[in-house]
Length: 498
Image (tube, rainbow, N blue to C red):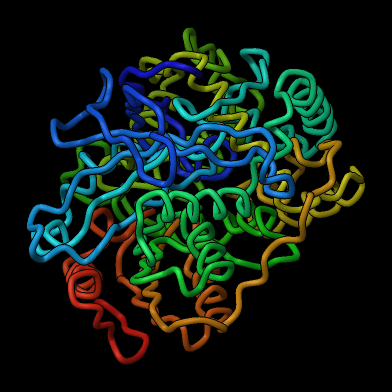
């Protein structure tokens, strides 16, 4: 994925391809590289920059932080200057989700939704994390079929078998090892946190404020742990479980809770009178309807030309459910329309997909990060037992959250232990979290809150969807975060925004 024009992702959900939220992407490459020394040479961005005030530059960082004088790679950064120089406090880094997302053009996108007093006070800074174009990029060269989200997410077979999942894990791991190059070994959350500190230094900032979203909350927490006194005001939005013994395994498992938390909201919406996409007379009927339809599609998939895979089966329906729960306001109708079509034995038009090189790049970065952060079990029997238990306890997710992803066959042990998040450091973190979040459920946010201790305050928002601040939250939560960014004042204790 080495292109610099506007790019959009397919209809995929949760944190990039494997675990995170893949929001629409637009990347702008810089017109020149870093100037000698620590100062950045800011220039106009090349084609693809979404706003006229956005500038771009490149930071050189070590490929391997264990050999800092060795080979360097490029990290592309963007900037929109503070709108009121006299009120400027510093730089606000927008840390993207994923792993596999970019914030390069968020400075001209979601950053412009920040209130005026925040835009007056901060230079907004975005970046394309290591491995993600137009930074030095990676690619596993996967087969087209292995790019399907319902394949990358480890949905078991209709009968619960995980044999094909283990075969896929080995095939994908082999491809990444063969085609990904040395950089695949050096993409991890700790590497990204160290890159962020190089960005901070290149910006000439003693301290850095940050707004991390989804997987970006884990990056932000790790950065705050490794470089606590380089942080200013830190907002972590839609928070990952920081369990250092499991890391991404815990995030995948979180879908069980996230779906159960969110499905009643979908059911109520899908049974509401006057809803043109209504599925049932009562909310209580929607869950059994979904389960029956998924089982029916497991037995008799419907051909779906131009989709990947080219069938609508039970797992594609389940994957669409996950995707839809990220943003109820815009995506609930898509799930309902798909269900209505399937009940009639038809399918809607296939969702648009991004260029395959974009999918390849995002997938490679996601895989490298998840597999390099923590060792996953390699035994099929361990996954088989866990999947059977999950299918019984959580039929909506059919065992997927406890199954084996590519990391089960990853040949490289992690180069460092996962970072344990603690309460050591300045008390300058504000967590904001929707009460119902399919990808980063409240239960995981509470664990991060506990780990941070006195360093953090948690604002829980009575809302549904992934990403709270200025997205799927509410006005109370938005006001609280904006006030913190502009004044540094947090609630004195954990708060609930009704």
